[in-house]
Image 1: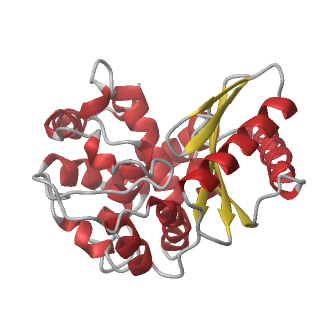
Image 2 (image 1 turned 180 degrees about the horizontal axis):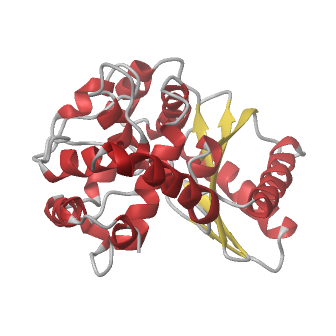
Length: 290
């Protein structure tokens, strides 16, 4: 791509962000309303020692793309529950959600209560606050998964420490994957949370000023194509705790899924890498994003 192309391509990417990628004001308003209603449930007379309500997931991190309406809401307790106490707390939250949304489907998952509301998916989790990433890692390694939801806080802090354009770059990558994943199975693709960290890992490779979106995204696809991300997760160890790496050298912990780490469902990165290679070789950006 030469200098005569870069200005119109920058404009093309900006238009793509504004028209196709960023969530609409209406979507944000509706999700904020859901967050407020559920937060009020946490503040009501549940009889639970809730110290804080935290909004996580792509919506909480402001990396959600248009049409993907999902929220993670964490009720942090101020004391560690035993198994019976946790089950009672979970059942109280489930009952309160069912009463507040009588016409919507709610279900109990391993560490969350899921509410499906008019096409939106909301996971309400119960957890414990950790003061440091190291504390999360130690607690999780010792089998106390209630602390793992604190990873959401540290990931949000980490994202805030990056260049202001990091969120747009993450949304561009998410939109690309959503448009190109085709027939790839669930186990062949990184989850949303994992893709966010891959973008941040790649941004860490720039020592100087970040390039414009066209140059950056082409470079990101090349970085993925060469499997440059394998093993490089250690760059973020100081901010986000990771369990020992698996055979791919990449382990990403999802705060919204404390039962297992993300790589447990990302069984192979080969098809994802092949997808990146195909997009990297394409010279027409419109084909890359359709």
